[in-house]
Amino acid sequence: MTGRQAADHRAPDGAAPGRRRGLRLPLSRWDLLAALALAAGAAFVVHRVATGFAYRWEWEALPQFLLRRDPETGRWVANVLLQGFFTTIRLSLAAMLFASLIGFAMALLRMSRRRFRRWVAAAYVELLRNSPPIVLVFLFYYFIGDQLLAGWSGNEAPGGVFDLLGAPPGGRVTFLSAVFTLALFEGAYITEIIRAGIQAIEPGQHEAAAAQGFSRWQRLRYILWPQALRRILPPLGGQFISTIKDSAIVSVISIPELTFRGQELMAATHLTAETWIAVAGLYFLLTCGCSLAFSRWERASRRRTA
Image (cartoon, rainbow, N blue to C red; front, side, top):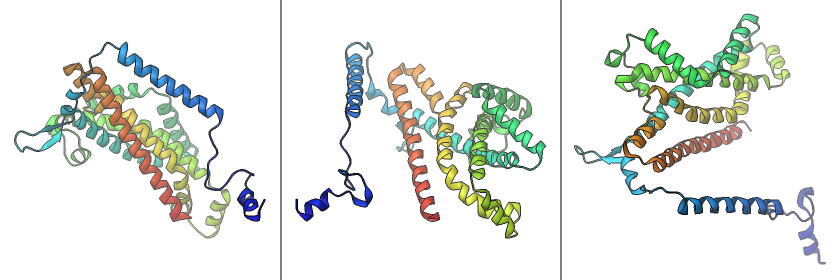
């Protein structure tokens, strides 16, 4: 064996023999068996759909419910499914914004030195996390919508924040009830995410900041929060994706989001499979895009703090 051959067989940087940097090992037999099982399962599903699924597919009728041509302007505008898609985006963004504010405030209460504040935050977290979200939707809809905000109906409701959130003029109270419900429900999980991220920082960071004369708020703002943000970004991104999926629950109070629009379209056209496959695809497009965006944000945050 020549010197060059021996160098090629040496493991770089202490790696195991036979492994070379930049190359991947071949698949194991278990990987191959799993791939074959998945391929067989997919082939079986396709075969059953093609031969034993008594359903007439009409995919050519679906695009018109995504986009339509406006007869007045001649431009392509969003139709039923895309209108629900955009409503889901506005609803999720508004809910996540308020949920982040609630979660941050409750996380500070959870870490407070005063026992009563910790009890209040703990009661909020345990109550919301252990309650079915659909029950919360009905509770907020009938209590807040019909009682506390009874005077804000239709066009009498004030604009401003409602217009900014994209709430429809005739259903602002219902939209606000849905946003509050999702914000409070998701805020309970964000509370624990933020609390765990801050408390995961070494105690020496607290002590060093206190020794430098920082106040408690200054320690949180300048020392603890920048470090905690790197820890909470991955679970926070996952929680935002969960908010998008949980927003389908508010279809039970007739919020015209994606799931509700899908139900309307299915009832009107009887395109059951096509409608729900399209709805699932739009949800996947939205959640996958958010996942990629949070991944890039996380990498950029690591590079800035490296």
